[in-house]
Length: 363
Image (cartoon, rainbow, N blue to C red; front, top):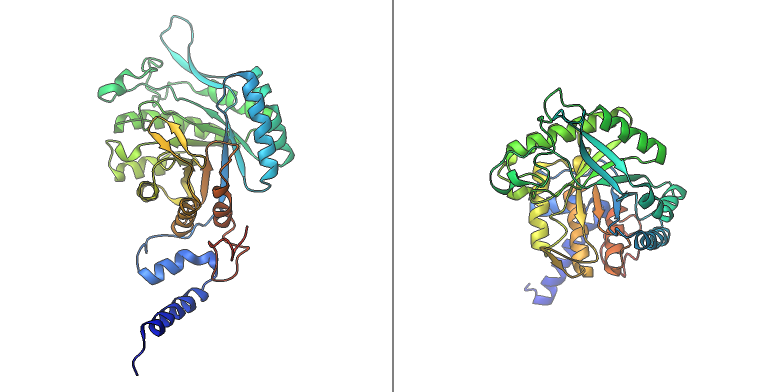
């Protein structure tokens, strides 16, 4: 008997429905693998799915205080959406000649206590809600050794000694880092080092940078603190993927956050997500998002639409991403929250076979 076109189409939809009905919506990535036979190397995320939010930016004390009030309200209104905050609190990581005239430098960490006090509303709210807080530093002072502009970095002469040299003294930095964290209840430190692009351009620059970061991380870990780092343009770095895997895998950094996923459309986002998943395991990767759009440098992008936000959230679920980091609180884009909450909760509030369509899975 011949089937007309409508009958055949209905049968196809029935097959697809039965296939998806076999799975809980938590396992959508497994459905993709089974149906397409692709991405067989993907692993389901072993850890919980978490969202960290960045707080900071204004240097003016009054503006910073008003920002802290707005962020505090935002965190309360979004309830359990955020799992941790990363806050720019006025820390400076500099170099100090010790003793003066010796030509030998040590890293020194200082906190602007007046600026920190202006952030009181958001820090108080974090304590009330038991939200962990990591604090940001904006650069790691090292010697540049690579070609081109990387040798002319603004802090190229800060340290006379190679930071990988055992005689390079980091005791003072580690002691200060621990004492500040204990005094203020911080869970760790975040490095937002954007000097020289990646933050480094050639392998030797990476080695010097990592030697500093790793020794700092080791000292923090002994005190039960964490160290995370934000990176960009790693796919442009003159270092092979295999070399990067080795460097990053051996590093003491607890988690690396990608800034290349801030901007661009979905194709650009997917390319960068694939790249970073190739050089980092999910347990060490955080994917950066810019939900309100951005107008900084190359980051010229309007706020993502509902479909674009859903595309990112679905990709996280399919690829086994464990952490998303969001720049910059408070977030205003209404198209951002529901898709990301579905990813974070693994569609726990959804009916079997439904996850991403708003009417069938309201959140």
